[in-house]
Length: 235
Image (cartoon, rainbow, N blue to C red):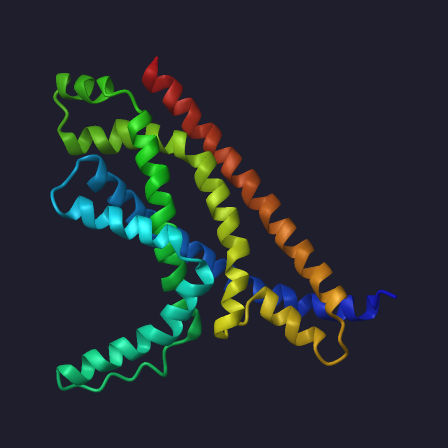
């Protein structure tokens, strides 16, 4: 039998865990996508040496599971920071750094790798004649990129970025394994005393579904705005 009393009692605690999930998702998306766009521009312009380094980074990160990145960030990164501090004669205490910070670092690296490929594909899909047209009216390369090229590329990239973000929201549940008390971790803690795992996972599923529905709608709205801009720019 489903324990409806447990479900009702667990709702406030699960809702209270949503901000941590959203903090990780938005932080990783914003920072990761900015890095991803930078990597995409570097690779598209074939900047010597840096372009090759970025290509290796993207290939490596796309081949490593998120859970492994989380473990590396949580266990290996503090040791590396401490050893670096010792090497320069300073003892750096990483024990006070919250686990959520390490989780965000891991998610940022993952988002940077995947979003860079989305941005690179979107930038390549913009007609090269657009840049030439910008030069013909006296725009600099930076002005053309910010005002014309990037908005069109974003219109192309948004559907894939939306899917990437929804996957990121669900992927934050893996942060439970490094001690971050987000939605999934909270559900497990609530379910453990009386073994109400079925009810806990039903509630967790509903929360993730609601979040996905809301963000999907938001991305659709933004996508439509960028599509109208692109239609105007290419007319």
